[in-house]
Image (cartoon, rainbow, N blue to C red):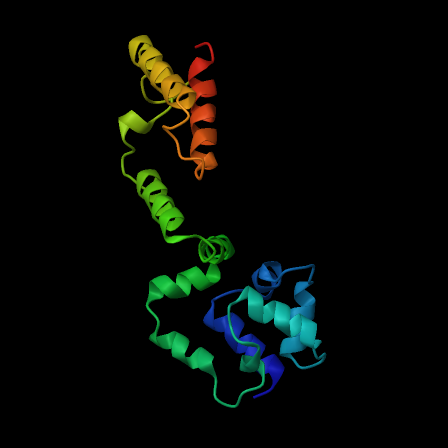
Amino acid sequence: MGIGKRLKALRKKLGLTQKEFAERVEGKIDYTYIGKIEREEQYPSLKMLQRIAKAFSVPLSYFFEEESPLESLELLPQELKELLKDKKRQDLLRKTQRLTKRDLSLVMQIIDVLSQTPPSRELEVAEEKAPYEAMDEEKRKYLIARIQKVLAAPTTLSSQEPWLRQCLKIALKALERPT
């Protein structure tokens, strides 16, 4: 099987059109170029194949091997196949690979909070025309005082966690805005 047929097989397995496929490859690629490669009217450069392989998390060797590792995609759960189609989720997964275990745990907690159905009322921030009630003044003043106290005490927050101090400063600014 040639490079063009392998490229087409990859695209079809992912359930993408030529245009969708081209959009997910880093850099500017016209979808008609993908069609030319698939029909083997044009051969891609090695750099182009590297960009395609990276975009879809397949080894570069996939385009040159006789036996396709892509066939093993059929064994993957549908949930994982969907991840391969979603560039933003792929980017998120790549970025989490660089996180420490502690930071990954924090990200998981944030995701858990964001994915709650329905969202916890304690975590909602009052917004204009929001479908939920604004925080009462007493609670707002209490939170402002607590955050100010934590920020004022140098030993409360570890110097190794500047991101936490920054998050508290942002929360404080939001709470101090006039309602």
